[in-house]
Image (tube, rainbow, N blue to C red):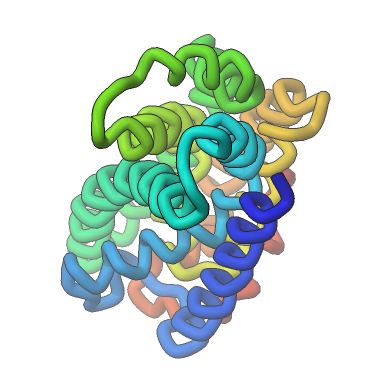
Length: 257
C-alpha cells in the first residue's frame, strides 16, 4: 500500500519541480505562448501529474492491492504503470481541447481585448455553474468512493485491463475537474499560483469529508470572480496581450477560494 502512495507522491513532486522551472522561463501570458502541440501536450501531462496524482492515490492504492496477489513484482510495476498511463491519456485528451481553446483565446486577445474580457467572465461563470450541477456531483462521488469504483473495475478483462481502468477513472476525474481547469485559460495556463490553488481544491474535494460542500463554495467563488472581472479585467492575466505578470499574480490575489 505504501509503495503505490509513495510512488505517486514522488512523481507529483518531480512534476511540480519541472512545471515550476518551465513556468519561470515563460511567465503568465495568453494562449499557448508559442508552444507547438507536441510541446504543449508534454507540458500539460506533466502539469496534470503534478496537480492530480495526490488525489488519485486512494484508487491507485486499492488497485495495487487487487493486482498484488495476481502477479510478480515486475509485472505489478508494469500493471501500475499501465494504470497511470491510462489516467494520463484521459487528461491528454482534455489537453487537446485546451490547446484548441488557448489558440482561439490568443487570436481573440489580439483582435479584441474587450471581447477577451467577456470570454474570461464567461469562463469563470461556466466553471462556477458546473460546480453546482448534478453532473459534478456524480463525477465527484465516483472519485470520492474508490471502493465502489473498484467493484466496477473488477469486471474489466483482457491484456489492457489496467490501461482501461486508468483511462476510465481518468475520464471521471476529467468530468469532475474540467470546470476547475478551464479557468487556467483566463488566468494563464502557466500560472503556478493558480495551479497550486486548484490542486489544493481538487485534493480537498476528493479526500476531505466536506469535499462536496467545498465544491459548491468554490462554484460560488468562481461566479463572484466572474462578476468582479466585469469591472476589473486585470484579474485575468491570461487574457491580456502584455501578459507579463509574474506567476504569483492573477488568481492567487483575486480568488475567493
